[in-house]
Image 1 (tube, rainbow, N blue to C red):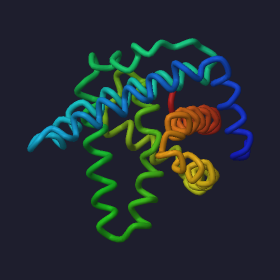
Image 2 (image 1 turned 90 degrees about the vertical axis):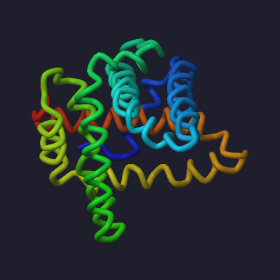
Image 3 (image 1 turned 60 degrees about the horizontal axis):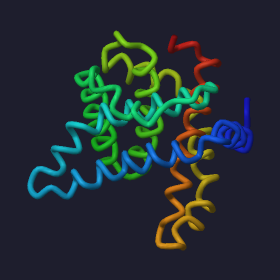
Length: 196
């Protein structure tokens, strides 16, 4: 089982020569979500509506990158033809994590880890139902939630450094995290065989 260090090394290898487009697509995603969230009265609803397909587009980009492809930034908008399932996965995961968070912060974190693979599964299975993607994520993460949590913890030092120059370092850090997450999914998929 690859360590967090090995997964990050895989991510850096995938990002080699691809940093600028990866930064570009991640920054574009953040700008769109940020701008929409500031729309008076309906900002939250606007983010909820487009968050699903944009997240699916971002996941598609990073999966292709980890698999050795040269994906384009246009992939961010390439999942709107799957609007309904992407929207429902986004909505349901938000609801489930929120409800678990009502029990205290720890159950909310566990729920977020449990459902973390939902968009990767959705991306790979065009005909899968939203609840089935979430169920498969839950199944895949059995015995691996701790691994993912530790992987996230390894970025804390980088996050502190990224925050120092007015947070500008996150422009570089977020693609690194996203690529590492995709590498984690690739390893997890190979072990579980849950997604095809």
